[in-house]
Structures are given as C-alpha cells and as structure tokens.
Picture 1 (cartoon, rainbow, N blue to C red):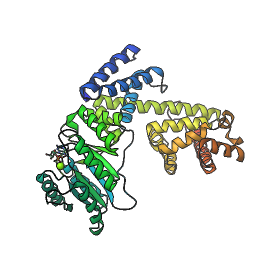
Picture 2: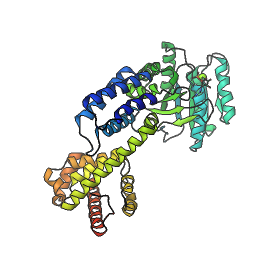
Picture 3: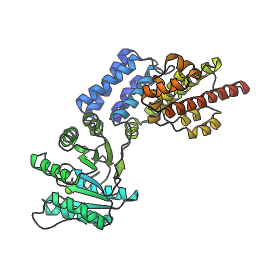
Picture 4: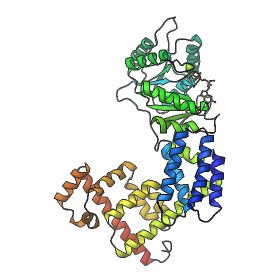
Length: 440
Ligand code: GDP
Ligand code: MG
C-alpha cells in the first residue's frame, strides 16, 4: 500500500501546481492502491470521494499549494477512517471486569487472551483466564499452557459435557475468592460462522453480561475480516476488534475497512505469536505508518509549516487592527484541533517559548473545543464581535442555547481573554524586537 501511495504522490509532487485532472489522476492511483491493499471496495470509493470533494471544494489553508492540500486531506481522512481516536478497554467500576473474546477458529483468541492478561497486569490489574472452548480437549490444554507461561490462573472444567455458559458463570463467581478483578473468557470458534456457535456466544453473553465483547480477527483473511466483523457485530454487539497477525500482513486493508463498515473500533493489534505481541491501536499512528515514507513525511511537515505561517499572518493582521474577536478565537481553536496541542504550534514560532509555557495550563482537548464551538455558535454576530456586551442575561441565554452551563460560558470568556492578552503580548514583542516573529 505504502509503495503505491508514495508513487501516487510522487507524480503529484513533481509538478508545482496541480489541476483538477491531476487530482483525479492521483486519486485514481490512491484508489487502486487501497483496493490492492484489500480495502473494501465501497470504503475505498467513499474515501476517494471525500478527499476529492475536499480537495476541489476548498482553496484551503491559504498558503498551502494544491499538492500540500491533497496530502493533508489524505492524512486526516485516513486517520478518521481508522477510527479517529484511540479506544480504550472499559474497566468495570465494580470488579470483576468481564472480557469475552470471540472469533473464528485460528483467529488468535487463545493467544490473545494470554496477551491481554499480560497487558492488563502491566496496568495493575489481576487477570484470570477462562477456558470456555470445550469442544476440543486440546483447546483447554492450550489455554492452560498459555496461563502457565505467563503465570496467570486458568479456570477450566475438564470433564466431558461441561457447558460453556456454566463455566463462564462459575468462573466469575470464583474470581472473587481468587482475588482476580479481570476475567478473560476464551470462547470456541468455528471455521465459518454458524448458527450453533452464535447461539452459544449469545447465551454466554446473556449469562455473564461482559463489559467488553472483543472480536479477534485474523488480518490475513483480508476482506473476509470485514464480513466476519459485520456478522459478529449484528449478533453480539461488539465493543471492539483485535486485529491479529499484522506482523504477517503488511497490507492492512482490513484495518481500514472494519471501522468504516461496522462502526466498531479496533482496540488492539497482534504483532507476534509471543505474549508481548499486543499493541494498543492508535488510528493516527496507523495512518502515519501507512503514509510514513521519506517523501510523504517531508510533505506533511511542509504542510504543517505552511499552516503555521498562514496562521501567524492572520494573527498579525488582527493584532494590527487589535480586533481579535470570538470568531477568530473559534477559528483558531478549530485550527488547533486539526494540528494538535496549541503549545506545539506556538513552539514552532521563534520566540514563543515563554508563552508556550504559560499555555500549558489551558488543556485544549477536542471535547473542550467542541464545547467552545457550541457556545460561540449560540452567540449573535454582535456578541461575537464585541464580547464586552455579554452581560448576565445574554450569558444565560447562550448557555441555554448551547446546552451548557453559565459557568461554561464564563470559562470560555476567560479563555478568550487569555488568548486576547496573548495576542497583545505577541504584538508588543513584535514591535519591541524586530525579527522575533517570522516576516509578516
Ligand atoms: P484461536 O483458535 O482463535 O484460539 O487461535 P490461536 O490463539 O490458537 O492462534 C492460532 C495461531 O495463530 C497460533 O499458531 C498463534 O500462535 C497464531 N497467532 C495468534 N496471534 C498472532 C499474531 O498476532 N501474530 C502471529 N504471527 N501469529 C499469531
Ligand atoms: Mg483457541
């Protein structure tokens, strides 16, 4: 995949400017690359359509050239397609946390059960494993071997005819005496999805109400991984997916499609047969890994640089007029959301070190930014341009209109004041010492 993408972008990069035709040609290549990586056809098609719409619809980011624009959009969209943000394992407020692993035979459930136990133990948890795959004697033995290897107890019933639902229930009762706060249930699989297996899994679910039902799926099966995920999700309601054997499949097409098609986040990836071969899944890192190649990386960096420059220019204009409004504040925050922490952006401007430190306290995560968005959008144009008129009753109206509390509105106005002060500071710095800011 990466090679193909790199090729696609090389052809873009070699020209100074790109036309609509160039965008089309490049995107055709991206599309081919995605399909060759075994990305679901519809997912690839939607992906391309979204990029095209964005690339052609906007003359985005002022000083970016069209190539840089496409590059940035591909990167953002790829991250989005992979799930946007990292998804965590839900830990029950009242132990034990019950995790149920499901999936086809050979997907890696038993191995992953062990890996997950190791991972959770590192987080300070006390896991135990449950052998609910009763159909093959070897399956129980395999889990016991895994448990012994990592020194985690395994709850099993070896007599013939034991029922997986009972085993799961008993295991959870036992967890309390055993002082275990996480119960990981390793279930049976089949070579293909069948009714009987699904019923059994539904019954286990009904009996123990797992906090997390995680589908373990082999990335090597490509497109089939998506179908598998869809079916399990329909029947069981998945909380997440663990994509195994990514060490063997460099194409990663399944990762791209599963989230898009099922809406279920990928939470971990399996990267070896060993017990430490489990990695938390970060969509942005996966996107970068796909796009992370010499040429592409430097392109991305230049995009970042260009946005900062544009931002600085805009700010300077506002400062000159000294009319930094709430609209500006909002667009700045939205910019920040795209780029990462405000500190980082300011860190890129020379001479901004001090201000950067002061900003550490303002933690602008994306939830916060959405809140800011909601509040500012509930204001009238006049209020946004001239926040001084925001008296008590206006604030109350805005709070109601945006579904926030008056405190939230007040906090936002305080943050805005901070930002305005900062603007002033930057302005006087620029006046005082020439050359501290980039040429504007
Ligand atoms: P189950 O039938 O779903 O319980 O699958 P198993 O846990 O028995 O795994 C089937 C095979 O896949 C075993 O040989 C594992 O060692 C192997 N396996 C599982 N996860 C990974 C992984 O992330 N990478 C690699 N390379 N092999 C894996
Ligand atoms: Mg197994």
